[in-house]
Amino acid sequence: MGVYPISKARDIANEQELDLVEISPNAEPPVCKVMDYKKFLYEQKKREKAMKAKASKVVVKEIRFGPQTDDHDYEFKKRHAEKFLKDGAKLKAYVFFKGRSIVYKDQGEILLLRLAQELEELGKVEQMPKLEGKRMTMFIAPKTSKK
Image (tube, rainbow, N blue to C red; front, side):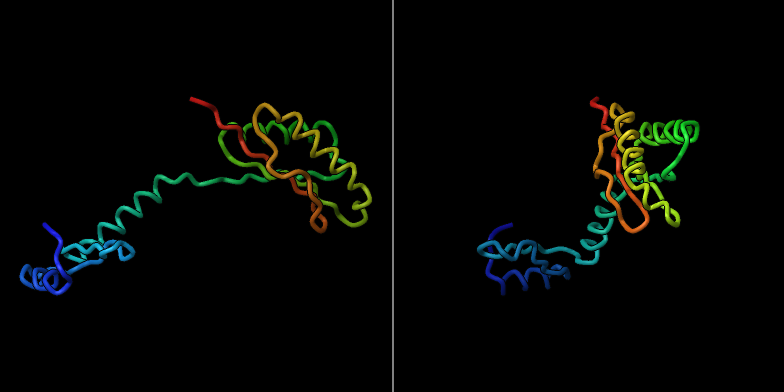
């Protein structure tokens, strides 16, 4: 292995019946390698697939409230939210306003902020309650446990 001019490198690749592959074109001089290009592509795809498998997939669970959700329903849904956050899923809590119930948007915001406060030790608020059309949405991400 050594430094060769491009024409000499091509001759070497042809002799070995392999390909001359440019590894880093921005280097001065450009870095090339004599190898089987198909095998190189195969190895590259294999590495990418392995990286993709290692990447963690973010699961988003949704919980829907009404603007006048009573205490029992709220507690029931809060327990589900706790379970989702403990399992490592993000939580999308939203209040859906039907018909003229949009006049109670302040009650919906209070409900979501109460949920965020009660789930404070399990997750942190990623997005504060925000009204989008007939929905007021809030995102809570699980707190990562330090190992």
